[in-house]
Length: 260
Image 1 (cartoon, rainbow, N blue to C red):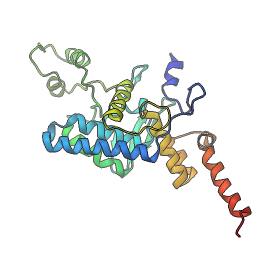
Image 2 (image 1 turned 45 degrees about the vertical axis):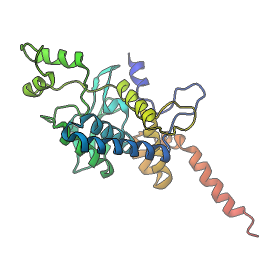
Image 3 (image 1 turned 90 degrees about the vertical axis):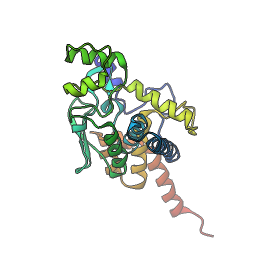
Image 4 (image 1 turned 30 degrees about the vertical axis):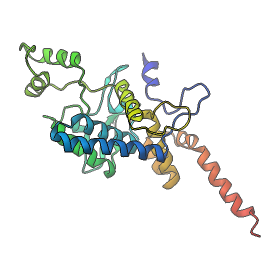
């Protein structure tokens, strides 16, 4: 079981000779633009009922800008300890999200303000009844009914299960890592996202690599390492060795280039 758990939280691809996916700036911009438009249209049409569209927008923003691992963000079916983040884990003031990290320790993930609006708008439409409520609750009926039956003796046949859970203060399960991949695949297809390389859709871990690469290029190695929470700096350096090589090539050209 431990091996399966570790596989859900990779920092390096286990693909067979295939370079791991890294969201490019273009890919990130495309999917952000799509979920923004989708959420705005749903809010205009449905108001506070635009929960799914706002959820998906918040999900994409968190993946794109925090460096969080998918199995830290939502439920991992391979590890019951990984229940996903809850609203009490989000700290807007200090720009952090507390997660169960790769080493099974609670740790802080950076939560930049660029992602705040999407999450706050989603929080308003979702209206979670308590802090100990998953940020991304499942809509899977069997899971909801099972949770509700464990919390009450009521006959649930004619009742809104989610209402029962809210009234009893019983938190539903989070969506799963599989669901997140399904959501991203659906948006890439419907949003006509131009996915680069041989990949079928934008995968969650590619967002993490893409963020690190952007920070590495535009800011500093130190910030990329901190955002990705690599305990060993060598891990970050190995991931983006191609950038370092390219920068060295530029310097070499500047030193030895022909100025004529």
